[in-house]
Image 1 (cartoon, rainbow, N blue to C red):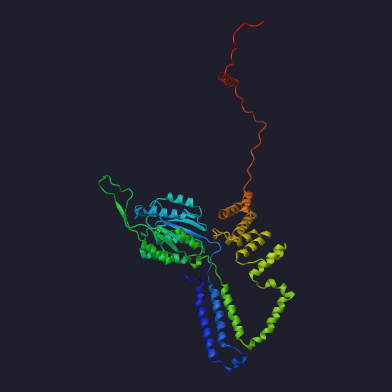
Image 2 (spheres, one colour):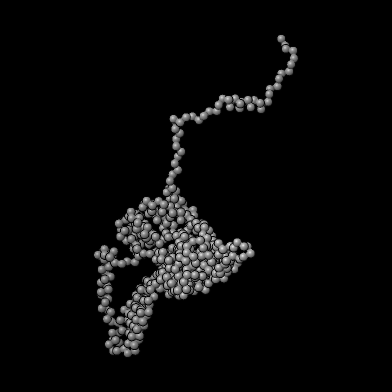
Length: 501
């Protein structure tokens, strides 16, 4: 189990030094001399103050981690066993391969914001099939085109395939391996395969989650059908080994799932920080400032317990305060490390007044979303879109918390503006489409996207030199008139009689 610290190695030396300082303070308090009593010092409080300073230093260096990531995301690398053993009949009557495909279909059947999927086939070697992406339809179609036993090397090798897959993964990217296999190792001894695969997983910090399929069943040998129908075809026996897959998953910090368990819920919890990933792959924010607060409390306690010698420092502290309040002190404020919240307030005030130079001077560099949005706005107004894209990258990644936070929409809109300024129209369209998928009906996003689409070209004007359309022949017209006359009723003939004169 991982401690909630980025570098827990600093905790134990700091705890030992803090305990030593506290013990020395208590020992001095029990043997207080006359000089210490005269100046009004309290050794136990001095020791406690030094212990808090050392403990705060250790906690700050260890970087405690908690909370939820600003932009949850996770890359799920699906590792599918494509050996011939997956053609064996499973417990429910279907083949292991079909059951694995049905499990993947359940994962891909629902929208999963913040999740990307890739596919690698595990045989005697690793066969990359699809790189990480969000096109779930393409992934399903690609898997339907694979036939077990007809791609890659024969057999299955976890000891060779898993390290090959891990070498292609980016460092520090939140990622896991999702293995669907029968757990049968056919190239190496189980101990060697376990040692190679688990060492590679621990070194990369990628946990393995898996589902084991099948039990010991025969599979027919291809091309072994006998001429005599009374003879039975040659068969090979395959034995599933779910215990090997379970031990491999637990050694990497993951676990195996039951076939009826929903992997998608687990993936979403890992992406949102509700389930822990290894520290090297985790997106949970760190808070080293809490160590500084503890150290400052210890320093304050030490100053209060130092007695009369600290009285001499009061004029110096008062002089420093007066210098800071003077006009010269205000001019030197940019050289003083102000809190990022103060800088953000000064920069926002300068932007409201239209003073871009002053806003650049106080541009915040904090990691809070509002600080990033303000810094990106300053970069865009300063004609520096590259800096805006860089600082907005953590806010515009794949996936966002639910419900959609207030900073998500302006971050995507400003990133699209920066892409347009860099002449990257296709990237701007992708950002606006992502915004409309996450938050449909945004008028500003619809307007910006429509402005990026090319206007439809009008139809070409008619060519005056083109010949007129052909007229029907007179013979055809005459036949049409005769037909009309035959269908029309005839006029009545007048009655015969004597003609009046």
